[in-house]
Length: 238
Ligand code: C5P
Image 1 (cartoon, rainbow, N blue to C red):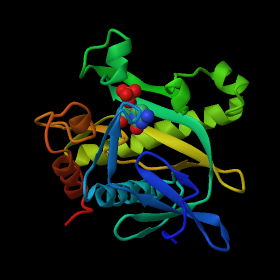
Image 2 (cartoon, rainbow, N blue to C red; image 1 turned 135 degrees about the horizontal axis):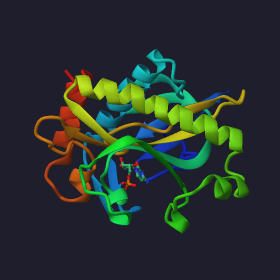
Image 3 (spheres, rainbow, N blue to C red; image 1 turned 60 degrees about the horizontal axis):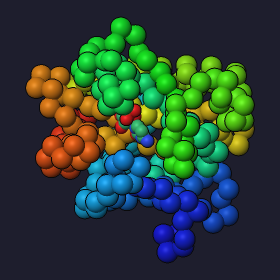
Image 4 (cartoon, rainbow, N blue to C red; image 1 turned 30 degrees about the vertical axis):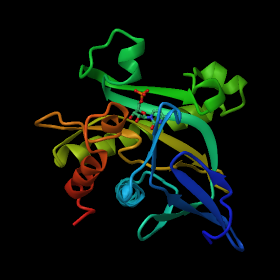
């Protein structure tokens, strides 16, 4: 299948059609790593593998906690078979601790614990630099209905509850993360795309060591070594 052209190629993943199967797609996690909307780019051998492992594990954890995801099957080393969903072009962000753009745009201290989880959604649109949306703008743009936005927020907070607890047990703080959601053929909204150190901020609970893509964004060291620590701690890399 990978000999064919992907039907979609993003910055770190490619999506392929499966012959005579409209309901599923094949997601290839590539070794590319980017930051700043593609302004910074590198290729790190083994990164696709680690992110497929971690993403699959986290989707399984979510499924076990009754959170619907697009995951169907993991194929070693870097392929995920997923439901063929229609992606809703939102970057749904949940934050437990202030970091990143929240501290750039507002007077929050980096590392400040937020009293309640803060949800935010940005418009997934590179041409416009992924601007933050509110409900009215999202609805006017036809991205989702009011009811869907309520459901998406609930889903994102449930993902946060489940993953925050999961990581806490492994000695890791879930600082923030982004998910994408998609609609299945029968209209169900599910967590899609990936959940990996590319799309989360993860800090070691004790040392506050950064274990996510900020290591690449800010040149803090060997990014893959950190991803490996995450995979080992959550038990998917032996
Ligand atoms: O940059 P910002 O602080 O808004 O990012 C919040 C969270 O969303 C981070 O975990 C970041 O990795 C993730 N994110 C992402 N893709 C983007 C923007 C943010 O995965 N395009």
